[in-house]
Length: 420
Image 1 (cartoon, rainbow, N blue to C red):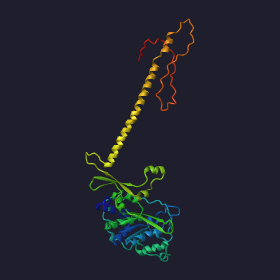
Image 2: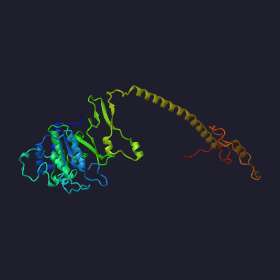
Image 3: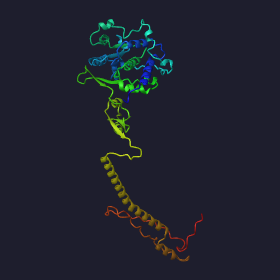
Image 4: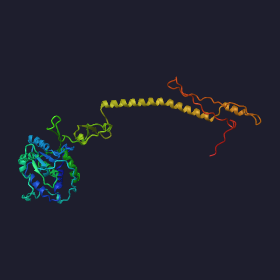
């Protein structure tokens, strides 16, 4: 329900898709294709042949695989589905280059938004000349295809033509335009469950259509992803795995009653696990991962947020225990701080006031004519030891301040005030 598009969005999307191939109105091959589609019944499954043929071939020695396309065609035909296979003519040649070639794609401008191009794309198709060089759905079975050995690419192409599932696009056009338009045409004509078999996200086409939100919503409902691999114990046999759209949308959404938000959470490795292992989660793993829902209930205006009874009790216990622990830590730190403050004050007092032994030495100074007897340096009382340590068997050494020379003036003389 969250991915449904309105009738107006459907019409705008259909018009933008036709403009991808025929924005100028001069693409005669595409207009003939539109005319041919009107003569067909809506399709159930539309296969992006090039994308399926190159599925899982991004490795050394990988190439275009006709058997991969055939396994998809035969699967849906066995389910009594109306199938349309779209292929570019370069894959139908006898000497086709099947290797993976990285070519720079042509750049196209965004589709126009002028009023004259927003007219009905079907208008005037019936008046097109039928005697054109382009024939749909294809040019027929060739002699090389008719004499090809079973299991070869040409034999598979002949079989697809005989089954009536293959359509060949004009050589100068992009095949994506044709299968996308065919899917939207079937959807528009009543087949709401039409599916496109492709792993293409069509980002460049989405950009050309001004990044319409309705296009992304339509993709989430009508794009079936696919994975084709060889069997481990039987390399000659292929295993196909389809990933159809989920019955729900992987989007944050509000419940019908408006009382709760639902957030999809993929069941994958956490961010910390990804960083520790050095292996980030791949995009394909995110797409195929199981999702769980985080539900956030909305509180009434002015109401205090609540939670489950058991969770509420556990939170209270954690708060009480945390408060007690903080009080105990504060009680242990307070005596230590007081002792440190007392020691610091006593040490400062000893620095400022001279001892009695130093005062006596100052009063017993000899006259100028007398010789000064040798006297030992004045000794200060030792600094009181610090509080006992946890191990009394190993006491800490006593701290003794450095001895200071005797003052030059009597202790009873008041200190001169400092001038600022």
